[in-house]
Length: 126
Image 1 (cartoon, rainbow, N blue to C red):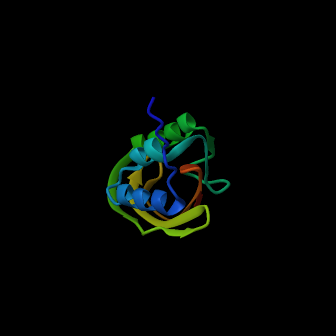
Image 2 (cartoon, rainbow, N blue to C red; image 1 turned 90 degrees about the horizontal axis):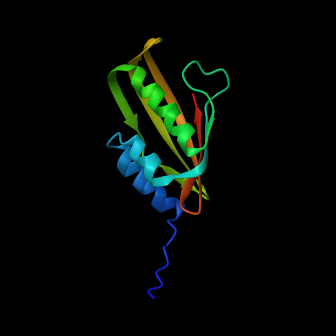
C-alpha cells in the first residue's frame, strides 16, 4: 500500500496561486481550488451590491448571481497580495456596468483567511 501524504499549502503559497488566477480574472477557479466547504463571504453591511453567504455552494451562487448581471467590464485590476499570518489581502478596482445599478466603480480591499491550505473567509471592504 502506498502511503502518500498531501502537503498542506502555506498561506503564502495560497496567496501566490490566488494572485496567478486573479490576474487572469479566474475567480471561480479560485473558489474551486481553495474555498473550504464552510467558507464565509462577507460584504459591508447595507451593501447595494452583495450580501453575506456561508458555505461553498452559497458563496458560488452569490458570485454567479452578480456575474450574470454584469453588462460590460470597463476595467479590472487586482494588486499583488500582502500576506501576514493566516491572512492575505489584495486591493481590487472594478469599473463595470451592472444591472440595476448602471456603471459603477468599486475600489475595495479583499481580505482572505486561510486555514489548512483552504480559504475559510473572504471579507470585502469598500
